[in-house]
Image (cartoon, rainbow, N blue to C red; front, side, top):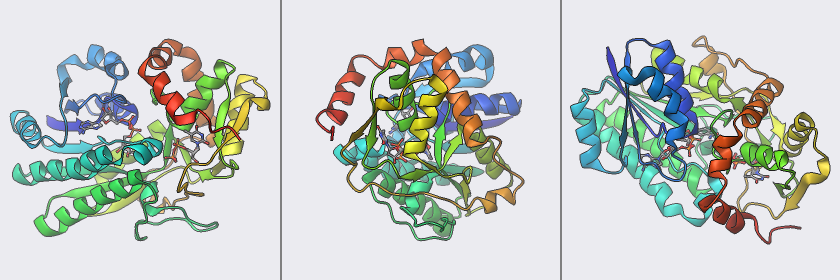
Amino acid sequence: MKNVLITGAAGFIGSNFVRYELEKHADWNIVVYDKLTYAGNLDNLKDVAEKFGGRYRFMQGDIADREAVFGCVKDNGIDLIINFAADSHVDRSLTEPGSFIMTDVYGTYVLLEAAREFNIARFHQISTDEVYGDIEAPGRSTEEDKLHGSSPYSASKAGGDLMCLAYARSFNVPVTITRGTNNIGPFQYPEKVVPVWVTNAIDGLPLPMYGDGRQMRDYQYVLDHCEGIDVVIEKGALGEVYNIGSGIETRNIDLAHAILDLLGKPYSLIQTITDRPGHDRRYAIDNSKARELGWQPGHTFAQALEKTVRWYLENESWWRKIKSGEYLAYYKKQYAGREI
Ligand code: NAD
Ligand code: TYD
């Protein structure tokens, strides 16, 4: 059996990944270690706990807490660490950057120290294409490109990546990194654009669109990303970075139209608001290095969005529970008074 520590897996991508891996690898025991911030939600793992109770364990903790992390790695005889834990939303990083630095940089360092101390067989870091900054068409970011984080979020993720590569080079910690594009799918907290727009549209509420809506993102289905991470952990070379994304670019305005079309709602729900400071215009990656390992994206943009919208329609109780109390205060602070 392999003992795997997966941090931040009470969030969106991590919870999908844990479900995927427990199905795929009958020889994996998984310990999920998560601080349960506003984005951490044990409802995301409820079915996992019921189905895989014997091979799944949850521990609440902060990755920046050295004593707790070292205790967890030692007590569970961990062989493999996969780090999803992060403060992950650009808009929040513009108002509270300190916690991004603590988790995404310092927390990554603490995990790397644990990997070094206990001779972990592999440390895999989950990163993002946002570390490259925006890129003009028709360019595509490759793994060799310089890092140019535009927001405190992307700068913190870049700091985490550089620390991983430094630990690989200086201390021979067996590191791999994947840089994923924007994920969509089940269990995404309704602060990122797709779940905000889908759940607002279901309720006939405005879809807030930053600036001219011509910004481009690569929206990939979350399980395609999980599959890519799994392939890199199995076949990726130590010390290497791999981009994971669909390779398909979509403008925000076209995303809004596609969501409204799927839900049969009018385009008049789109509401232009003031732009995000420092907003990156276009992300686009070259995913050929990951493809060379035998991975390929399994969904077109239309398939990924259709599955995602269907999930939010069929799981209203999940997001309605979140979209109350604290969330409403966040939403008001984030969006009030920005209408143009
Ligand atoms: P999320 O915000 O949904 O979940 C983050 C999880 O990390 C939460 O469960 C939270 O409780 C936990 N966490 C936060 N701080 C912690 C700490 N100090 N200690 C322990 N746990 C902590 O994020 P997500 O969208 O699932 O993203 C997961 C990872 O993937 C992040 O590293 C993010 O940078 C990266 N990523 C995300 C996307 C995307 O589109 N969402 C794209 C590429 C890469
Ligand atoms: P987001 O989901 O925050 O991801 P990213 O980390 O790529 O910024 O935003 C995706 C795109 O959607 C980005 O160009 C900003 C835009 N956006 C809106 O137009 N309205 C919104 O309410 C949000 C959250 C994002």
